[in-house]
Image 1 (cartoon, helix red, strand yellow):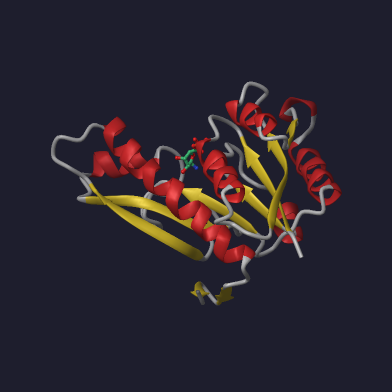
Image 2: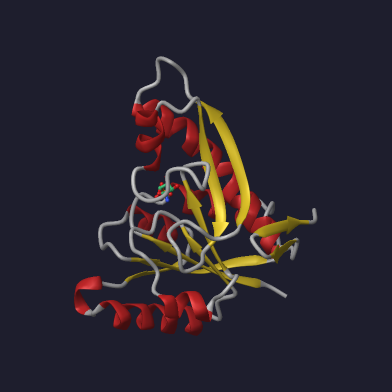
Amino acid sequence: MTVNIAVLVSGRGSNLQAIIDNVENGRIKGAKINVVISSKAEAYALERARKHGINAVFLDPKRYDKSEYDREIIKLLDSHDTDLVLLAGYFRILGSEIIKTYRNRILNIHPSLLPAFKGLHAQRQAFEYGAKVAGCTVHFVDEGLDSGPIVLQKCVPVHQDDTEETLIARILEQEHIIYPEAVRLFVEGKLKIQDRAVIVRD
Ligand code: GRF
């Protein structure tokens, strides 16, 4: 059986690209990206999707109020028989209705070692805090901010001569490794949520 994936984006889409590449090269088997939905018209992620023959949809937040917008997303997800929702640089907070409908089937990538540095500009937060290690986290999405059960994490060092930009780049490189890996584990049915912990059986 194929796992149908939908990806929500708002920008550049480099994580989307990493997932696409891993589906195409067969590291993620038994999955198909059915639709990419963007909250921004100019998101480069939409172009990436189109280049790979994936249905790319811009859903304009200005046309709906918040809960209507989320309902439109649910309609799109349902009409694409979605099994797994990936947030990949999606700049909006997901409404509770989506989270309820797709409970334990939504993943997000966050550029910090959660629970440290939740929210926006996580890499800058780590940098300005003077952290010696930083990193990224793939987690299930629940109603809280960057608070759902953690699937995978990866550390990177923070060097003395780093700038915010060099740190962002070092973390991003790891995002592109652990996000496809987490998707593979989900698709192969190897993740089990037990309270706050995700048990990985690979
Ligand atoms: C990444 O740093 C991701 O961790 C964060 O937003 C950024 C999206 O980058 N959630 P991209 O659009 O995947 O290139």
